[in-house]
Image (tube, rainbow, N blue to C red):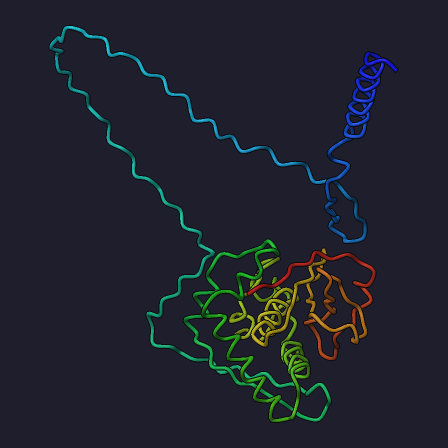
Amino acid sequence: MSNRSILLLVLLVLVLGLYAQVTLSDESFLDYLPETEFFSDNKQTKTTQPVQPEQPVQTTAPQVTTRKKKTTTKKTAKRKTVEIPEQEDVQIYKDDRIPDYKQTHTPEYKDVKIEWTSHDQMHIFSITMHLDKYMYEYYHSLARYYDEKDYQKYIDDSNNREILKSIADSLKNLADGAGYDGSQTALEAISFVQAIKYVYDIDSTGKEEFPKYPLETLYDFGGDCEDTSILLVGILRELNFGTCLLDYDDHVAIGIMGEDSITGSYFEIDGKKYFYVESTGEGWTVGHMPDDVKNRSAKVIKITG
């Protein structure tokens, strides 16, 4: 074979190798990107969508234009007097729903006693609270949070949280004396709230809807479903239980985070089970759901903090 034939053969092999390399690399970059799961709100269906490559960070410096200053003959300008009109006072609006209680009176206490039968029917428990009339009147005068997602603000207020913590401590003392564990203490908290009278807002406040601070519900010894539910999640939070509010079109209840061994109706949120708890009326147990809310969807509002 001549040198010319050998040279042509080598060139042919190089060309074929380059073609094969281009063909193998001609695939979509996205085919090799990891996939991220996107879950729907109801946690029942999922679809996958590839992660899009990030856009490169722009590092180009901003363009600066410089101009040579033009030399001009300085002229003396006549002075003009400009009158600045008086500015109107700026109105600063304060959210009148946010508590800012300051004690200006000597407290005038009202004793409120709540009595109930223990979950195992072995004891009659009671807690007596000394609640200040002037503090109650202040909170009762505040504008309301009507959106359910804002209900946690009723239990985040510092004065109300102090009351909730005091009740939680009293419940712990009662439970310790009876030899109860933490879960049984939670059952006593539920029974404590269920012992409060059910009162429609229209009857107690003259308004169709009037969500209450825990202080108001306790002082009035009465409230409707959102009032007792707000109170109950506040107490259970102080007992270190995970909770949520369950908002139906015409009812509010709560959920308490529980183990898989518990039986009853529950909502699954972020992989955790929150068992239904009725805050109105005595005798409802964890996971026991009234017939009128069975098989109905609810808006779930997790309680934090």
